[in-house]
Amino acid sequence: MGEPRAFGSLLRRYRVDAELTQEALAERAGLSTRAISDLERGINRAPFQGTLERLIEALARSSEDLTDFVAGASRQRGPAPLSARAASTLPVPPTRLIGREKDQASVVHLLHREEVRLLTLVGTGGIGKTRLAIQVAAGMAAHFAGGAAFVPLAALADHRLVLQTIVSILGVRTPLRHSTTDGSVIHIEDWKESREQALVEALTDYLRERQLLLVLDNFEHLLPAVPLVAELLSRCPQLTVLVTSRAVLHVAAEHEFPVSPLALPDPKHLPDLEKLTRYDAVTLFIERARAVKPRFVVTNENASAVAEICARLDGLPLAIELAAARIRVLPPRALLQRLSSRLLTKGARDAPARQQTLRNSIDWSHSLLTQEEQRLFARLSVFAGGCTYEAAEAVCNPDGKLDVLEGLTSLVEKSLLREEESTADVPEEPRFLM
Ligand SMILES: Nc1ncnc2c1ncn2[C@@H]1O[C@H](COP(=O)(O)OP(=O)(O)OP(=O)(O)O)[C@@H](O)[C@H]1O
Ligand SMILES: [Mg+2]
Image 1 (tube, protein in one colour):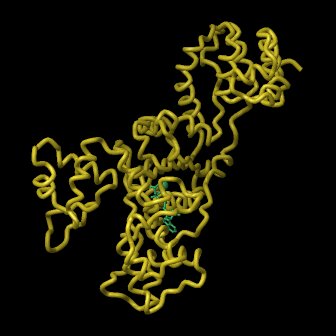
Image 2 (cartoon, rainbow, N blue to C red; image 1 turned 60 degrees about the vertical axis):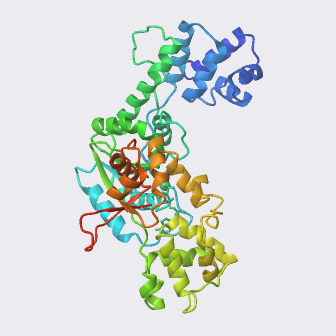
Image 3 (cartoon, protein in one colour; image 1 turned 30 degrees about the vertical axis):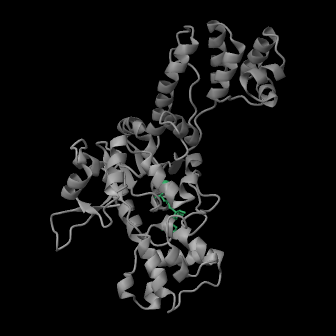
C-alpha cells in the first residue's frame, strides 16, 4: 500500500535510523507508545500539528527529510469536514433559562441585520451573557447554512491560542506544509513561524465557504486577539460573530448589546405573591432554592426578604444562584441579614472557578485592569451610592496624576462600573456605580 502508509513507513524508518525503540521515541517526544505505534501502522493517519512538531524535534532529522515527512502527513489528510460538526459544539446548560425573552428577540433581530456582523454581548461577570449567547445561537443555528459554532475561551491564558482554539473546535483541517509547492526544503524555524499564517489561511478558506454563526465566549482577557476577529470578518463575507465579553472589543465592525440584570421587584412596593414570583430574579431564586430544598416556597412571611435579597444582589443571576444555594440552612430572613460576599461562595462544582464565588468573579474582572484603573477603582470604593465625574475627580485624583475621565470610561467599558441612567432630578449628571 504505497501512499497512504507513507507517513507511517517514514516514521518507522526515521525511528530505526535514530536507533530508538517506540518507547524511547514516545518518551522523547512526550507522546504515548500507543500513539507512535498507531502512526507507524497507519491506524492514525492524520497526526495533529503539535504531534508532528514533537516528532520532528525528537527525531532531529535534516531539513530534506523533514520536507518528505511533513508532506507525507499532509497527503494523508482528508477533505474538510462537514459543517454539522460545528453545529454540535453548542453546550447544553444544566438548568432552564429564565426570562430573557425580550433580550433574545433583540439579539436575534440585530443578528438578522446585514450590517451586524460582529455583536458583543457585554456586561458584568455572572450577568448571564453566556446563557443568552447559547440560547440565541441554538435558536438561530438553522438560519445559518453552516450552523452555529461555540468556542469557549475562558480557560485560555494567552491570546495567541485563540486562533488554534477556533481551528480545533471547527475541525478545520490545516495544511502541514508550506504553501510553496516548488519542492524547496522546509526549515524548522520557518515552518513554525509560518504555521500561524497557515492556520489563518486555512481558517479563512474554511469560513469563506460557509455561512456560520461563530460564538466566541468570554473574550475579555484576550483583547489582543481582536485583530484576528476583524481579519476573519473582513475576509469571510458569510461569517457572523457573536462575542460574550465583560469588556467591549473596540473595533470598527462591533455592535454592542448590553446585557442587563434580571427583572426585579421593588421591595418597598411589594406586589402580591403571584406577581412577585413572576419577576425573573425571584423565579431564579426560587428555582435554585428548590434545587437544594425541594419544599421551599415563597410565603407572605418570607416574601419581602426574598425580594430584598434579589434587590441587594442587583438582579445578578450568578449572585442569586450563590445566595439561593444557602437556603439549605438559612431561611430567607436569616440569609438577608448575613448577606455578604463571604456568603456568596460555594458555586456548583461544574461551574468555572471564576464563578465559584462572587469574589472570584470580581477578581477576574479586576485582574484585567491596568494599574491606573485599579488605583482609580480602589479610590472609588469610598462612594457608597456612586458618584459623579466631578466628585470622582475631586476625591480620587488629589494629585492630578490620574486621567479620571479616561479611567471612568474604561471601567464602564470593562463592566466594573455602571453608569446610572439620568433621572428627572439630575438630568445631565450621570452617576457611576460599582
Ligand atoms: N436567564 C437565566 N436563567 C437561568 N440561569 C441563568 C440565567 N442567566 C444566568 N444564569 C446562570 O447564572 C450564572 C452566570 O451566568 P453566565 O455564565 O451566563 O454569566 P456570564 O455573564 O457569562 O459571566 P462571566 O462574565 O463570568 O462569563 C450561570 O450559572 C447561569 O447558568
Ligand atoms: Mg460567560
